[in-house]
Image (cartoon, rainbow, N blue to C red; front, side, top):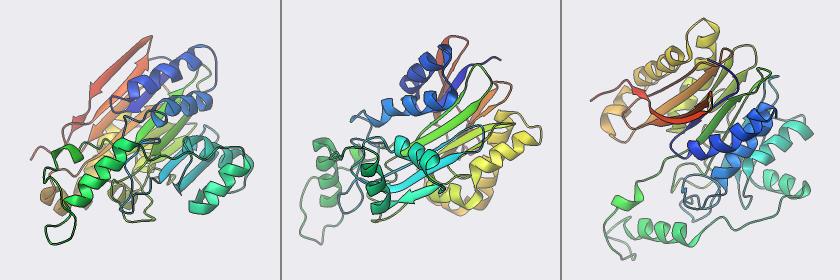
Length: 303
C-alpha cells in the first residue's frame, strides 16, 4: 500500500475523496485535503444528513456537528451549531485559534461570525417538507393531518468521515453531520467528540465512525480502533474489534431495532485501510494508487 490515500464513509465519500486526492497528489498536506474534501458533502443540499440541506431537529432547526484532527494531535470541534454551512472549517478555527477543543451552540455560532463565516439558512425546501411529513405522522390523536407513508423518511445516511495520509505520511481526519433527524433540541452526537467520532494518532493511524452516535460514545469507538492498531492489529481487525465491543454492549438494542447501525473506517501509517459495521449496508470509499473505489464493509451481526 502507498501514500497518498483517502478513505471516507458512504457512497458520497467518492466525491469527497476526489477533491481530497487532487490536493494530496499535488503535494498538499492531509489536513487541507480532509477539510476541503468534506466541503463537497457539506455543500450538497441533496445529502440530507450533512451540512446544507440536513434534516432538522424536532423544532425544525438544522444543527450541525463537526470535528477535525491532525497528525500532531491538534484537534477542534463544534457541536449544535446553526446557520453555518461548513462546520468542519469552524472546527479547524477552534483548533488553530483557541486553546479549546470544542465550542457549541450559540457560542460556536458567534465564534464563526467573528472569524468571517456568513450565516446561511440551512433548511432547504426539501428538508422543510420532509419535516412536515414527519410531523404529520407523529400521531393520529393530534391536530396534524397528512399522508401516513413514512418510507421516504428513513433514508438518512449519517456522517461524512474522511481520513487522509499525504505524501509525507502525515495523517489527518475529519467528520461532519447534521446528526439524527428529528433529534431533541440541543442533542450532540458522537461526530464532534474526539475519541468517539474521530481520533488520530500520527504515529499509528486514524479512525472515524458513522451510525448511532450514542452507542459509539459509550465505547469511545474511534479511540478503541486506533489503540487496537497501536497494539499491532490491522485497520480491518481494529474496526472489527470496535464493532464486537459495540455488539456486546448494545445487544438488546440491536435485537430490538433492525435499523440500529454503527460502523468504522480506519487508516494506518502503512497506508492500509479497513472498515466494518454491525449490519449489512455500510459502504466506504478508498482512493489509492490512482483508483477511487467503493467497498461494501464487512458486517458482524447477521440476524
